[in-house]
Length: 219
Length: 219
Image 1 (cartoon, rainbow over the protein chains, first blue to last red):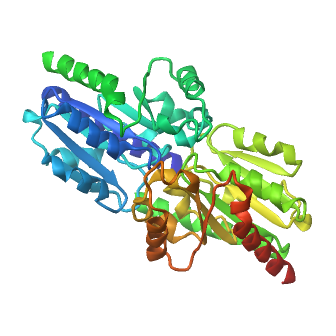
Image 2: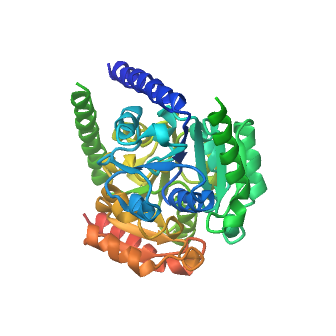
């Protein structure tokens, strides 16, 4: 009985995700689903990324949080369309929530929609939002052994940003070992090593992002 | 329909949690549910705690993980009863799983049972396991703003161990501010500031633990 209901939830989610995907495609908008543990640096990455894109593209952000609007408030300085979703304790965003948020965004004039998911390395892995790519921010302070422990998330990521690499030696973590384990789980994902506070470290990520936008615009 | 099923799940969990609680109480065993984000330091805390208790008490550990036995393997050196629960992707432990694990542990000769939950600051908050106290390990590397963002978890904790305090300045985090926010959400919880790798910083935590065991033994 429980399994049946759970299946229904997943089927409903995936149908809605296809709707979202079609909206993004029709409007040539790059959509990215940012996932991570709490405090891995998704919002800081967004702040620095938006600064570095320097108004080259029209960007909007859908913020997912259990209760507060703290992350969205940090982005108001950019004067871009922001939609806050509060899950009221819920552990992930789903495609229906994103569908509702998209009603508040004029996709026709957008180039990129970032979705910042709830900080959780487990549940968001199972919910397709209809995004073009899933971007996993992994903080090196979480240790060497997490990729295999949270395999579904690492398996379903298109990009992994290993963040806070400046703290690797203080945390006694071997970055290469982390990268190797990620690649052993998911050979096709793109891995960038960054320290989100240091803009130079974001160069390759920004290039990847720009390449994606340009390819989608050509369609 | 969905809400009804979810309610049933919660009622079933809470009934099973009472069973577990009764088993712990009947055998005068202190039971602790360790919760945190991924990589906040639960297993390191367990390693150092078991070392510091230095065979004064009979300890066993129930390890919760999505897929691997990596945390349990780190504890085999102590030659204590260990039970591994793999949730196969599931985001939390529930009371039924703990009930199953307890069949493998001789509670009559135990003093402390530690349960290390799945690394997740959201879902485990909603599942009572029948434990005497919920112990939240919060890594300072996760930033200043998380207590209100993950309010249910901070609200339901009996103890909060603020971990990795040696990294506070590198992460530009004000520890006092974090403690203030925790206290504003949950005035009654006990807060300890630790660096799990530094055993001296664990003195107060060990004293708390010993006090709890002695009180339970007197019953």
